[in-house]
Structures are given as C-alpha cells and as structure tokens.
Length: 280
Image 1 (cartoon, rainbow, N blue to C red):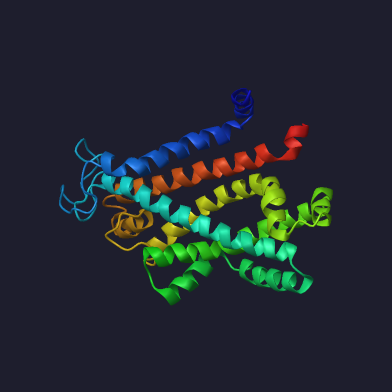
Image 2 (image 1 turned 30 degrees about the vertical axis):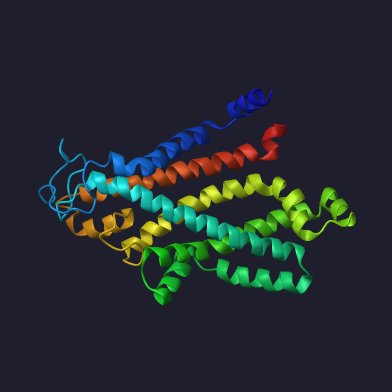
C-alpha cells in the first residue's frame, strides 16, 4: 500500500519539478563521478595547446594555460555544489533556530530578534557576503561561511512566518495546554507541518548560494585559483572573450543549467505543497 501511495503521489508532481529533479540528479551524479569522468587532470597545465577550440581531444577546448576545460568544468561541479550545500545547511540551521526562538519566546526577545533580522534582510545577500569576506579574507572556507551568513535572514524570516502562523492553530494550543515543552512542541508537532515549505525554500536558496559562490569567485574573493570553480573560470577567461569565447561559454552554461534545475525544483515543490492545489 505504501508503494502504491507513493506512486500516486509521484504522478501528481508538476512536470517542471520532475524535469528539474532529473536534471539535478544528473548534475549530482556528475559531481560524484567527476574524478572518474574527467579525461585529464583539472590542475595540470599544457595538456593541450593554449586556448584551443573544442575538438575530439578536448571537448570544451582549453584555457589560457592549456588546461582541459571539460575536466575543469566537471571538477567545478563538485566544488560549486559542495559550497552551496554546506552554505544552505548552515544558513538554514542558524536561521531556523532564530525563527523558532522569535516565534516561541517572550515579546521583547521576539522584537529584538526580528529587528536584527529586518536590518540584515534590508541588505542584499551578496553585500553581506562581501562585507564578511572583506573582514575574513578570501578562501573557500570563508566564502562558504559568508554565503551561509547571508542566507540566515531569509531562512529566519521564513521560519518565523511559518511558525507564527502554525502557533495560532488549535492543535499547538492544545499541545501547550497539555504541558508539552517548547523543544518537543517544535520537534514533534511543528516541524512535520512546516517541513514541506522549508524544503521548498531551501531548494530555492541552494540556487542562490551557487550564484553567490560563482559571483564571489569571479570577484576573486571566493574559491582561489587554480581550483576549478565556475565563477573563477569566468573571471580568468573574461580577457579572452573575443579570442576564445568557449572559455566563458561552458562554465557559464554550467552555472545556468544548475541554477535553473534547482529553481524548477523549488517552484514545483512550492506548487505541489500548496494546500489550495489539493482543494482544486
């Protein structure tokens, strides 16, 4: 019965979300198998003529140091997805705790947390990340921390709004009157009812984190050369845009395809979890 129920639910997934899931699964498999799939060492220079056009030997051509672009794009998949995943998980954990604390604490603590979140939320994500990296310095660890911190206000706001909406419902009021503590109240009663919306928002945040990672690397503040990161590859190839456009084309396409796939998943999950869809 469980298998049939899951099959029936799977048939109701929006086509865009299903396509996005398939594309994201393919990209994830590429990230896992990148060392096996890459025909050349992504760090080794002069494996081919510098700035050579795409060919049978080098599917995506080579960069200004003669490195194989196909191998570097494959290895960049692992870096970009890794940074995005860690940043989203950390930002969601911290933002979720702040949102729960604001929703289930006293009035003054709630006001303090919300005002701080509002101030941070008024700044663009990339500006918060740039400010932190200006203080911490460039590097993959610092970039991941900065992107996670820039996502905290968004997830805190989302978690607070969902928690505040559920808190007013009778089942939570009954649980509080039964003497259930706030930690168990959140873990047992609240989380199962808001997890679907949180997952949809986290998926959308994942694509934002990948874009932020690429943007920071493009500015020289994220993953540092010679690591094969998509944004860094765009930065190193921008001087050859007329001479060898493929140096920018393939990393840029990788960013676009990855971001679009996760945006399709997030939008599809949001529509799938919408209660009004079930009523229709």
